[in-house]
Length: 127
Image (cartoon, rainbow, N blue to C red; front, side, top):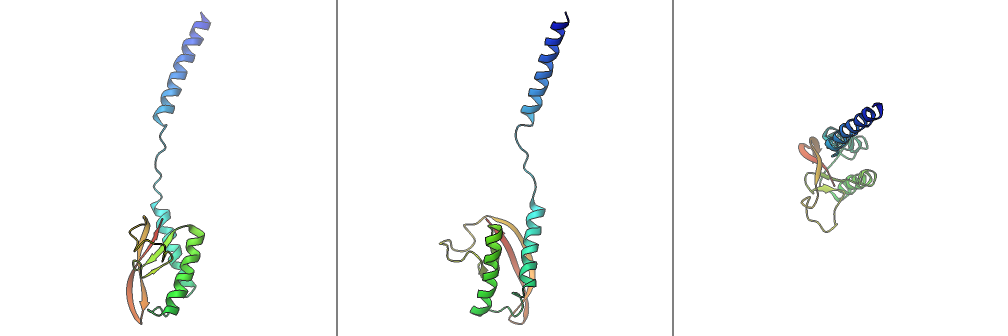
């Protein structure tokens, strides 16, 4: 009699366990938007602290210095950096015009001095 009770208990236990495993089988998507925005904030802060945003203007020297450091960020994070759309970017010349071929993962709006005047830039990280 005890063996029949043990078998019934085992069947009930296994059915409950299989139900729990099936119901939680699909992994839930983790909302990592806060981390992506923090990564964009950190990338902006790196460019700011390195002095790339000081004396920013349309000159080739200013662009090259900024885009060189953006390239370093891209190398470390595997994300393209866009500032002001494609005005300044670390992914220039890869055959894709603009940021249309990329999936923007984080975007923040920041103000920088451009040609001696404050200007708001959309700063984005993209895959």
